[in-house]
Image (cartoon, rainbow, N blue to C red; front, side, top):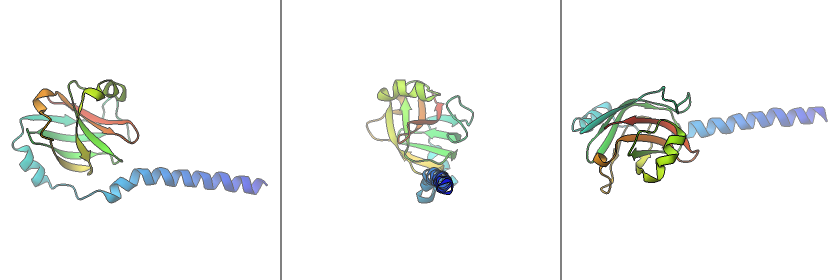
Length: 156
């Protein structure tokens, strides 16, 4: 009986670790090719606003972070840097800077979802025609699936 319980515990732990690694690594394995530095630089050359994601924000941690430069035009948002890999990342424009999960949840309904981030080194997102970046002040990267704050930056 003891061997069976030990078997269940050890295999249960292995299954849990494998499941957690799968959730973390699957987005990396299926991510499309990131835009080149040249493509991001080209998009950023027309920037109206600039911002920076930092790793050490109050709401970030070793699994949820971003580090790099963001450039915003009227039609695109480009990012040169790295974001911690994970599933279902969305980029939002917000009217005020939110640096934690709680701060973002308080303003999420008033925020504008720009689109899904599918790459973790560099990205370029087209801004929907209904969104005007001049009406907002900051950006937030948010994981919809797990309700996790990833990173944020103010640009105005």
